[in-house]
Structures are given as C-alpha cells and as structure tokens.
Amino acid sequence: MAVTLEQAKLNTQDDIQKGVIDEFRKSSYILDNIQFDDAVTPGTSGGTLTYGYTRVLAESGADFRKINQEYANSEATKKRFVTELKPLGGSFNIDRIVANTGGLVDEFQFQLAQKVKAARALFHDTVINGSVAENEDSFDGLDVAVTGSSTEYHTDGIIDLSTSSAIDSNYKVFLDEFENWLAELDEKPSVIAGNSKLIARIKQVARRSSYLTQSEDAFGRKVSAYDGIPLVDLGAKAGSNNPVVKIETRTVGDSVTGLTDIYAVRFGMDAFHGVSLANQDLVTYFLPDFSTPGAVKTGEVEMVTSVVLKKQKSAGVFRNVKVQ
Image 1 (cartoon, one colour):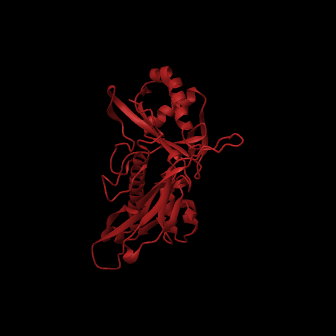
Image 2: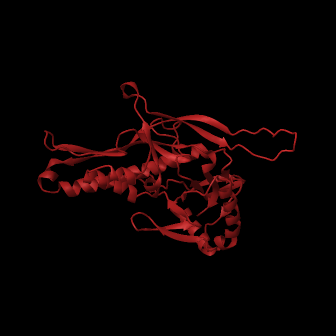
Image 3: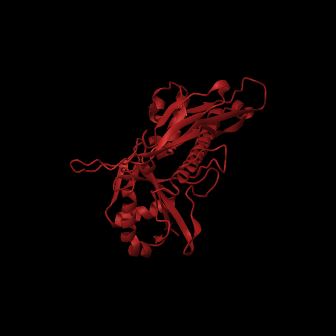
C-alpha cells in the first residue's frame, strides 16, 4: 500500500512522533511528497529486507496496418531489479545533569531536530548519489539508474549559465535543450532538483522567459517552479557544506570548471517511489531513558527505506551546466 509521511502522521497518536514526522516533511519537499510502498516484511530471523520490482525500459509501440497484412511486432522491454531496505538515521547523547537541571526537553528537542536535519540530508544524498557498489550499507540512487539511459541528456557539451551576461547570451539555447530533455520523459516530472546555484540559475532563466511560477507547500511556504514544476534545492551532504549535487571540473572536449547536473523525476507507484517496512512506522525515534543507571543516555532517529525507479523514462539527468 502506498503511504506518504503526511498520511503516516495521521496514523500516530504520539505527539513527539508527529513532531518528528513534521520535521522531516518541513525540511524536505521530496520527503513530503514521495510515496512509500510499505510492503517489505523481514524474512526468517529478520535477515531479509528485499524488495523486488520490474523496471520498464521501453514502451510498447502501436501502428496502423494494411488490409490482409499483419502488424509489425513490437514489445515493451523490462528488466528485473531488487533493492535492499537500509536503516538510516543517527543517535545522540544527553547527560543526566542536563535532565536534572530542567533542560532535558529543550536539549532533547534541539538534538532531535538536528538529527532529523542530518538524516534528511543523507536521504537526499543517497536518492541522488547512492551506490551499493561504493557503499554496501546504502542503496542505489537516481544517478545509478539514469546513467547511460535514454534520459541522460547533454553529455557531450556545456551550457554556460555562470554569470548574468552568460545567462543573457545562452538562456534561449538552454531552454530549447531543457525542453527537449523534458520531452524525453514519460510525463511531466514532479520535481526538478539540483544544488542551490543551479536552482538559482534556472529561476533566473525562467524569470527571463516568463516561466517562473510559484505555489505553496503544505506548510504555507512559497515554492518556486519552472512552468509549474517545483524547483528543489537538495542542499548539502550531512555534516558538511558540500552540495548533494556536486559542482566539479570535467573534461568535455576541454577541461571545464564549475559544471553540475539537473535531475527531474516523477513520483508515483508506477514511477519513482520509496519503499518501507510493512506494519511499521515510516520514521521512528527512541527517547533517552533516565530511569536506569548511567550518566549519559542515548536518543535515536531512524528510517528503514530504499527507493526504486519502475519506469526508466520517469526520471532523467541533464549534464554539464556551468554555474560558476
């Protein structure tokens, strides 16, 4: 069954749990909108957290035929994939002296909010950059799924949007290529995502071309969009100032600095969605227990999850935009 964090909040009576869920939702447009298939049940002895699915690589075709002639055959192509759910989150310590001096609630809320912030950053990072080949404790993200596919676009050139004058000179070329790329996707994407500099450049392009729109999220905050598609800044990696979507030097003909990528993805149970455990909370927390011996107690926040791409053309990446 598909569930969102908003729906998960309605299913709990715990005020702290509701607050933790809201912290995840408020700090991440993706976590607030992506659906989770809560279908995974640990196997024998709790050792299996596997979710199997089929990814549609190419759609089936249709055509006319002449009388007394057969249709030309064409079949949809697909491939079987599996992903393993992985726990992500973290723990924090609180000294009992803090509790005994009346600061427990404030300190607990502060540490809890900071841990949610870090977990959100890790989720964003893994959704884009996750690779089981590089980190077996992680799960594969979008970059693994779209690299080498028909929706990996603009790999052989660059478009310079690094300055105001460069945007003035190149925004029409960028828009043409950008729209061509979006046309490769199966439907209108749910989000266009990247780092803060890239999102700023797209806003500037959209403003020049009258494609910049705005909407409100569930918390009443303004969300900027390109022609109605929300523009999402994926922020920095957990515990650092390095952007989730990196800005780097690449060899594209010549060595070029300041290059980055744009990701677009459609959320849906037939497209890109999360996976979670059956009959368990999407987000869990554990309170420090000061009723037992020990000076320092531990609190934790955790999600057990993964993500899957069920249609190849429901996600894509636009490479090599120069933003600095």
